[in-house]
Image (cartoon, rainbow, N blue to C red; front, side, top):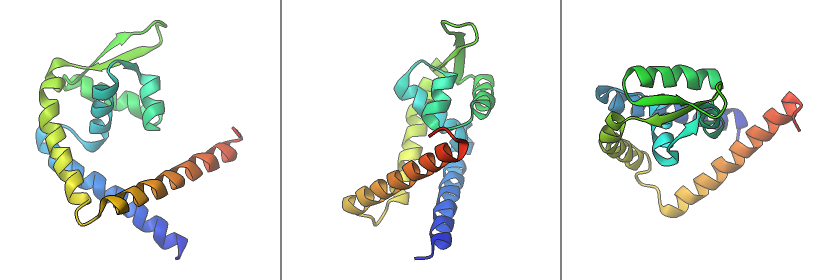
Amino acid sequence: MDSDRLVHVLHQSVRSIGSGLNFILEPHGIYSSEWSIITTLYHKKNISQKELANYLSIEPAAISKTVVKLEKKGYIDRKEGLDKREKIVFLTLLALEKYPTWQTLVAKHREALLANTSQAEQKQLYDLLTKIYKNAENFTQVFKGDA
């Protein structure tokens, strides 16, 4: 298998997944990048922006920009953490009210993505993507000189 073709189709798949998610979420006032933050906060409750960035593997500046957008929409609130520089983020009541609708849309999207794939194939794909992700993280750490 040609590694360029493989990585290309992986990249194109990720882009298409994001586009499809944006298509169904945009009429409801959010985008896929915002959804990842919202669903993380729904499950993890109150966490710092730094923890959020680390968990999602997104640069802190990008997290901050998206959090500000979500705050303006009334979906996220922030409070000072133990350290005055630390910001704790959490979902507002408005976001909690809308969450079930968003979750239903996302679930339908996920179901469509995985149509015609067995549980065994999904597990195999998960395992392969996990290996690729770990390799990518290891490469980045070595490249940065962190390892």
